[in-house]
Length: 467
Length: 68
Image (cartoon, rainbow over all chains, first blue to last red; front, side, top):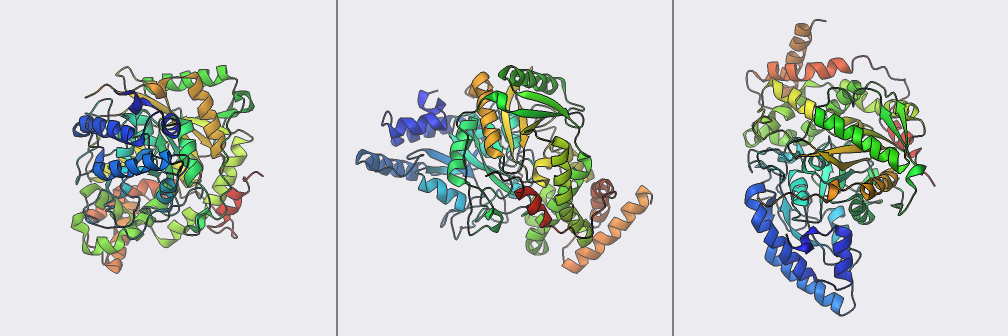
């Protein structure tokens, strides 16, 4: 690997800014690496290499004449194919939106472009972001850089694979039921699902408007903070961001100032041996850092999962109803089946699930007391194979999906931030992550904890071997 | 209610909603959907809500955490 592609986002942005390297050099290095990896991973759905090189040359010229666009000047990124760019395709991993040209640019991407980033292309995703594994009947599956027979996790499948293989420095994903954190866990990268309402979703593809969060997958917690520096904050185009406080990542804070809660059940039940030992090692690392660890007893998590599933199912079906009426055969079988599941819930049940969020959040906050975050596994195993998770559209598919997303729904339903971090490897050399689930609008404290953890560990620095 | 009775009720409801919404369903979809969602519905059955709670009450609780 060339050294340039191994840099973190913070390092490469600094190197370009200091003119120790150029945006063109960096873009060429990434394009060369993409050429090597793309056949094995299927991480990109579209590559815009020539256009990116032209923009990179302009960025270099601007910097040479003393003009910088922002903190990420000249840094190439790529994002999940659901972030609209005016005049560009945004096909959302689907046949239904094949050929769709976006009429406007998403607020998150507009902020990143304003900060000087360059667009390398668009990344693979589960069809309409409605799948946790990275399977896609229209595009073929995305493949895990650590073992291409295994899943990336989804739905931000290309984002996880591309960041892990060092094809991009960071990528936007979205998280409605784990879609940032699952690829981060399975691919060995860092992913932040921000507090609901912290980042604008305007002109990004919706799945479930009460649960959707826009956030980064990157190589480190610090890199996630750099992306959040640009994209977090109120946006008149997304009313849910109206209360969002200014982003203020804590640069340094003593780890001993933090307290983490360890759930006494549910999140520690039925873990496979590798995940269980990784979880224990992570606790030890945090303890050695001086973080205070306390046991907590959370309310019934199965009820929270059920409420989240009802909200997700009804809202997704509502958004897709016009196409379900006229183009149902254009959906992949599993996505169509899951959308049809949304027809099973009454208006009363949907509203009860939405109304319950306030008392459920209050009960959660009472249960965790003053802790900054709770720690939990992301999934109960490292990446399974693509074949064994190809569960189709039968009645058992929903239960198989719920098994993979078992530890995900709390953060989505209650709108909590959650940071997924690499924390170890399985005996088969597959990455395993942990998640730190924070308090509402406590995203910055998760970043500070993640930075402390990554200063003491090196799992985030591991890079998969070339295919 | 027995599991079978719950699934039968869900199947009937799905058929009605799909017809009302003009969403085409395969003949066996109702049974599949009922089996898929019945556990979810039963897990939430015990939740009771205060009379005054509305969906936006959630925002009040979440924003109570914003620190100056």
